[in-house]
Length: 377
Image (tube, rainbow, N blue to C red; front, side, top):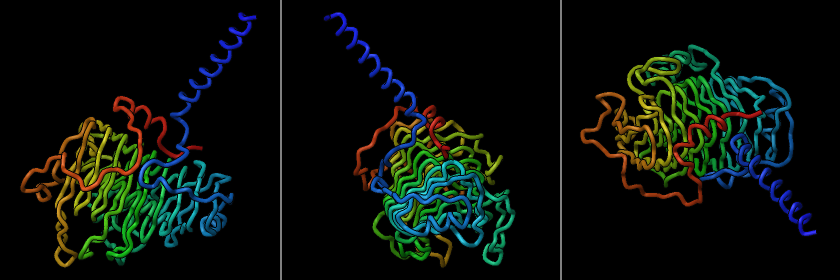
């Protein structure tokens, strides 16, 4: 009797161990159930709304409270009419939806939004749709920053957007920038509480830009963002760039690509850079990994000196980097940008994360990011 019970107990234990092992093995491929970080309160929408073309997609995104789900594979270029997202909305592209903006893709001005499993890809246009405003636009082979203005912006977060989670998307060949988090471009409005996680950013001049308009005379209270689990591959600059008093926490991201000599897909003239801050922006960097000599391996904190008549100086940024692999301190992308005195990458920050989070050891970051990041079907 006791032998039969012992065998039964052993079988139960074996089943539990096998199930735990399977869960652990599959955890690399599973998307997060909830966001970590400053966007942790994003819950999105719950009422299922299926879409299969542009009209039904716009309907789902515009109703509010929807869980918008792609049913078939298709592509859309919103042109001059970005896809506006209503409050309390989740967009799940299921790896089927591809947005190819020739100007703006998704526009988020509201609270409680989740965007995941969408592919964003540049259209390859050489000029902007707004040539009267951006006459120098070159969206396919930009050499200088001025060349990309007026080109593709994948996701534009602005105004009073709050509690936003951008997760498991794939961005490639972004003409201008893959994700822009900005005010109303006049110092008003101030997005906050945003998590950007488990995305792929590939072959682009800029990846993520966060800040306040240079014309703002004073800075608002700091906004907050979290970046984790993202892959940055062959990105030239802004991985991310945090400015305008924003405070960002970047952990467990992986940076790779060709040596940063200003050549190759998506790369411009001069030296590029990875995580960077200016204008009182701050970044806490923990347990990130960069392949040496890539653009992403160069971190920097710069002074903000706007062009004459375009705002006021807002000071330098601060970076505190610890337990990262492969990064070097760099004070700019040219002799003109280098600071007169070197700044360390162990600045004292005015914030610390207010949430619980889990750091992967650096020897696991590359493997797990490559296996998990990007849009999933």
